[in-house]
Image (cartoon, rainbow, N blue to C red; front, side, top):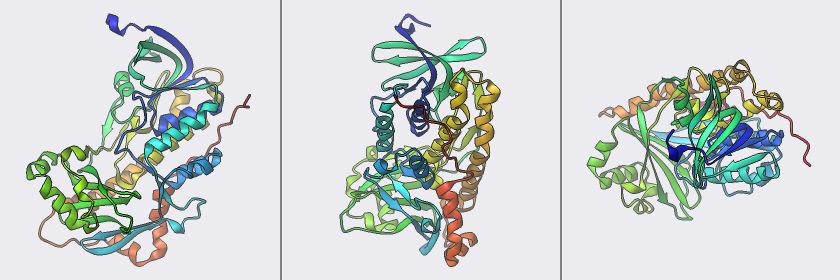
Length: 415
């Protein structure tokens, strides 16, 4: 370790959570609520980053309800989606109707992720045992033999050594903690990448079409109130080819697919206004080492299909608190006890990824191949559209997921 990496100070906590995304902030809130001495490290100075997942599904809304946070949460600006309509080769289809759910919150809330994370941080301030350290980036692990004993982190004031009985990696699909721990990743693959951008929206513009699929092209649009959030799907690795065609050619394709964007597309002035999201589906074969647990995207990267990433991360956090909070009152759980999280969550993760792969292989890959032949609506989509009662099945899988988690961890008495 070089002299500029020598820790300027040391702190000791029961649990150190690396990463202030949905998994990290929800788990920090739950452990702070349980009276566990916990610190959450977020490498940025704030949560304001564009093009992050901002779909809050009914499973997460139910968790917020169980925590007594739902009233304040739903006062934040958001839009609600119940029916998922699309155009498949020009044919109208409906793939899900959340209004058919027997759920207290039968809708998807579209909310900027930074609002969600800020809300959790503010709600957690009442827990003396919870600290959120912004501008603090984990750069290495502290080891005692085979055991992970905390992290070294970079702060504006220098390096800090954070000794922890348990370190939990919530630092995303490019997890530094996971990489430093040497945990192996199983790559499942995805045939596409996504271009994210915004187009302006006039107050009188409204449209229920959510997805559009044409030969060689696919696009998703979200009504975000004063703008349209757009996802233009391209074949894996074709971003440079798209750029070589030029911005005008791309935007012409966009407007042909979604004429409602015509007035607002001028807001996209260069490729700097477009964010490339490299799609990956993967998961760890092993989520733990002694003193270390990975959850959320650090354990399993999800495709943007269905917008389920935020909600899988929250479900991981709830399961982790349910299984570990009481044990953390006394010491670090054993690796077998930590592995209970994988045993609990691996089935929902694998099933969700399997469904994403089915959509990729049977719909997206075929659409992106293009060709002169008109697209045929897949049989399953035709059945769901023709038989409205079937629309509740994909709605349930999308909204609640496979084996949703509920809050069972106890709240410590507040002083």
